[in-house]
Length: 434
Ligand code: SAH
Ligand code: F3S
Image 1 (cartoon, rainbow, N blue to C red):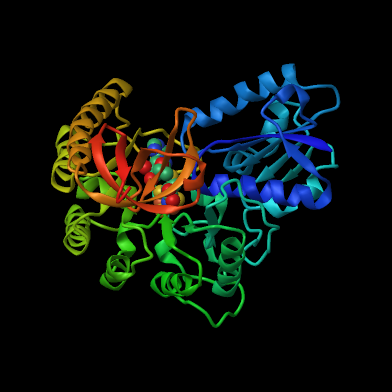
Image 2: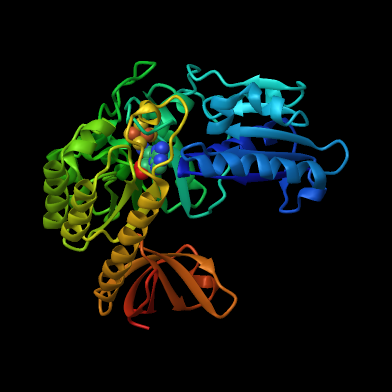
């Protein structure tokens, strides 16, 4: 049996792509996974290119793979950086055996035996390809509902690396949900770069769901599905119908990612996000009104070209008004093939760093206060992670990490937990009624 070392960088879609790679490889010959590069027969790095950092990490990782790998072991580069750098990867690192793009995962077994194969066609349509089953989590099933992204946010390289958006027919999604549940999954995580734009374009006829709200309804009807999450929606497509389904469908977890990017309407326009500060605040208010216990997370970029102190204050204002439960914040990173990279008025790095720390420091205080409010609540937790110290951890319905005393019989169970203590990123509690 051969050994596979696979490293995954980036978003949840990359995690799913790596699962697809493993599944497809196993169709050809049996691989076992290893954490030890030295014993691997095949080494794959599944890359992210959304910011500069992971791209430079790729080349340093490749250098270390070359030194550590055993004789005859192959090295492959997959994912978004593979898509946009293509043959340049082999030019810079000639010991790389193959390059396979984020939209070409189904071709993994074809490239495996071709020296210096490069498979990076971003118009390739994998939306109806039925991948073999492989899941790294027993209770949580990641399921793609679309490929690519049709937006053109001026800072973002994803439309270049993942191509145009195509929705996966709902009949295929529902079949996958049914298979996942049969294999023990309790939680379904629907994935796309833009999930609530579902139904924008299909490559085949399908009589099922034509929009995201309908898809949520269909998925929730599948017997055995206990929880549904989705990642990531776009604020622009958060219409009332969708928010009401989110609020009223008991299977949908009350956690939602609403990526802000900037609080300045002027910058949002330059980012080509399609919404204003007011629209964003209106949607978040509506979410909190419909679901008072909801957890809202967001993505914010600081130092986008032209960002003034005033623009940054608008972002801080949204932070104060929405009080996000979780924040993912980034310093703007100019990316190749994106319009914003050549905008004038690039913000000096020191200013962007200072704004990033101001934002993060204030958010930490808000996050701590939001976490303290959890004490005394009873929340539903799906237990997945057995710890060595007699404790077991899982996620509450709202996505928060909860740890209780317990052992393996709790694995895969959903239980009511009374929260007794709150830290910045995790809660402690006791199982109710025990
Ligand atoms: N729709 C996607 C977004 C992918 S990129 C999703 O499903 O998550 C994830 C986040 O990275 C974006 O929301 C944005 O905040 C950040 N990002 C994208 N391009 C960036 C850039 N050039 N510089 C800094 N951050 C960026
Ligand atoms: Fe990127 Fe905007 Fe799509 S952030 S992934 S272009 S929605």
